[in-house]
Length: 150
Image 1 (cartoon, rainbow, N blue to C red):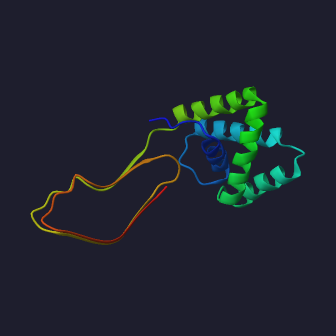
Image 2 (tube, rainbow, N blue to C red):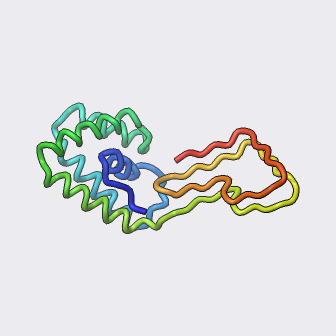
């Protein structure tokens, strides 16, 4: 399923340029193209350049800087629909190039006994459909500290 193209999606994908990614070579090239389009657009805008640099320095994990870039992009899109369309086209190509990923944990378990689990963590990088505790049948279930993060 393709998610709507928002500024959060655009900036999140662009930030993947600096993170370890499961993206294929085609998606990596498109992510580079997306980042370059954003960086070139804001050349000479000191605060925006600083936020882009913060994202690069934090290997894509500078959430505050990403939110600031999202805000700047929203304003830019009001002024220039063509720029929005340009970035949206790149994002659409990235979405087509990235395989749809499904991450499953504790799925399809059937037992006449109980299930007990502690400290189960499911984490996905990039877009993934996460499934945790799906289609589980047991006499009793006891879980402590289940975490899901994307």
